[in-house]
Image 1: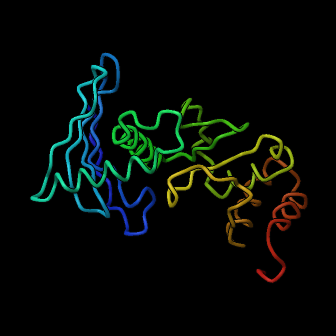
Image 2: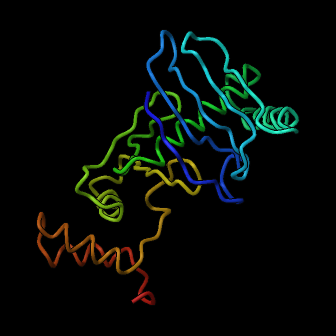
Length: 204
C-alpha cells in the first residue's frame, strides 16, 4: 500500500477548501482500497476509507466537532454534485473520489492534460507529457496551431481542474526558455517568432 503526505490546503483552495491528504491506496476487489484524511482548509476532520469491496466509504471523526464537520461536508457535496447525472447518490463519496483524483494529479511530476474535449472525471482519459518537458514547454507546444483543433486543456492545481491552455499566461522568461528548448526541433527564428506571438508587447 502506497503512502503519500501532502501539504495543507490554503484557505482559498478549490472545492470549498476540502482536500484529501495522507492518502494510502492498494488494490481492491471491486473498487480501489484506500485510507485518507479529509481536511477542511488544512484542518483534519475525518479519516475516510473503503475496503475495496464496492460499498460506501466509511467516515471516522478526528475531532470533537468532527461529526458536525462531516455533516457540513455532506451538505457541501450535495451542492457540488447538483448538476451531475448522479446527483443524490452518495454525494459525499463522489466528492471524496474527486478529491482523491485531485490529490493524485497534484503530485504528478509530469504535466497532465486532456485533448479532444475529453471528460477526465468520467472516463479517466488523461494524457501525460514527456518527463523531459517543463510545464511551460507543454503550454507552448499545445498553444501552437497544430493543436488548436484538439481543444487542449492542462491541469491547474490552483483550481483543481483542467483549464484551456489559451487561458493561461506565461511569463516572458518562460516563453523564451520554452522556445529555446523547442528550437532543437524547429528553426530558431520560427521558434522565437512563435513564442513572441503569445506575449503582449508591453510585457517585454
